[in-house]
Amino acid sequence: MTAPLPLYLLVGLPLGVGGWWYLHGLARIQQSLRPYPRRRRGHVVRALCLLAAVVICLAVTMPPFGEALEERFSTHMVQHVVLVVVVAPLLALAGPGQVVLAGMPTAPRRALVRGVHKLPTFGLLTPHAAWMLHIGALWLWHLPTAYDAAVASDPLHLLEHATFLGTAWLFWWHLTTVARRRLRGPAAAVYVAAAIPPGAALGAVLTFPDHVLYPVQARLAAATGLDPLLDQRLAGLVMWVPLDFLYLGLAIAIFGRWLSRLPDHARPGAVLGTLPRDAAPLSLEVRP
Image 1: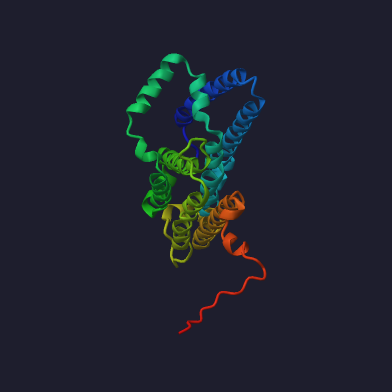
Image 2 (image 1 turned 90 degrees about the vertical axis):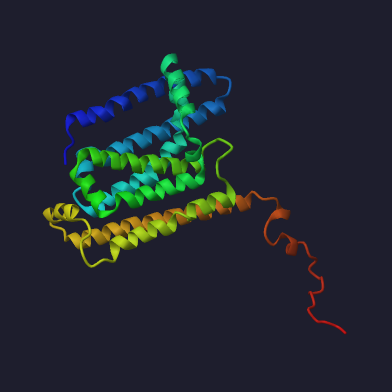
């Protein structure tokens, strides 16, 4: 499926302007942070994260590789997983918003800041809303009608990818932002682990049916010589297994890091560990 040139221009021009503003803003910030080499290195790392996110995003969505991925449901699901768990967290780590603002001309920057302040965005900045939007987008676009419509329409397909990327970015932002509202410790671990059951349920819905759920995608898979039902089951496993293991591993790592930073006296079992080795065991005997 080849998108028309106007659609590429619609996406490419804003990205090009935003990229120029980002580079200009990064240069200005690096100049102002010359006495602070550590902070300058931090901005360089963020710029590399942004570059990696852009390169990977273009690689998996643009021709020729992006078109090849979209021919089969299983490889199409790989594309979606990469957007959600690779590109989106890299964008969240990059945190390009402030850098872009620093590189924008004064008039559009002031207009943008005033416009954002007037929007009711506070509710979207809560972890509950980010989690629901992220999971809701995954389920909404994998409903058979919505998914097949996106496969058959370039504008809808672009909207699908933008929705996946935007909601996943917001999901990961709560784990990577430098602001005080960033989730930490057990709250962050629970936040990530809570994304496992919905993803597993969606993977199961795609894996276990004995009939094809997506007719349009099935025709594309059949044209490549792959059984459409097998393709759908492979797609379900792609959605199910990698996401669950990634979220579970990340939740365990976050919780383990939190435990390792606790003072010795605050760790679980620390009270028992302070008892003398020769202390008498507790007795549950009731004496008259």
